[in-house]
Length: 218
Image 1: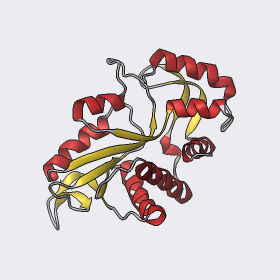
Image 2: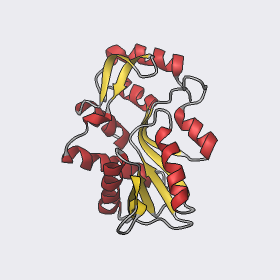
Image 3: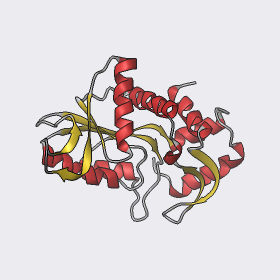
Image 4: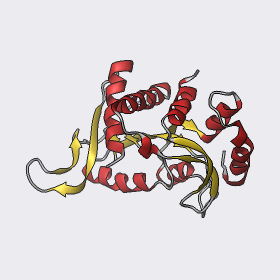
């Protein structure tokens, strides 16, 4: 199996990717649901780091620092940094933002690598629904230093248009900020994994395709 197929199977085995009938926050009725809150063990976190690191290495995203937006992005950035070094020989810095600026001690808005002008950073997140996390972290990054955003890496691109736009969240942030978002897998990859028998769920295949036809983007 490819690392993408392995990741899809990993999500299913850990109860992160489920099939059935779910009402999403948007009000849409979806035949699948992704709950990254079900990642909770050291073994899971270690494997997650491997998949994120593989995505960065495969896409040849060059940077000096990984940024993990608080709170979900913090462990993701740390485990990705470890895996990049251990499995790919790539040693990157990492940092994450505080919810409030520290006004004592060393101070500052970020913990870890103190950002510098011209530094290339990769933002690490779990999934992207509306682009809210990126919109919140960008002003903090720019206030800290004139960094260059090399890209953002997420686990799954839903490839789904927004409620008030024909663009997906991934497409919207690229149009608005020029930030390219890389995903370990896409919804098209998940459908292909069902079709090829990598994961079970063939009984939901038609509903997945219908949902994709109704709300999907390329």
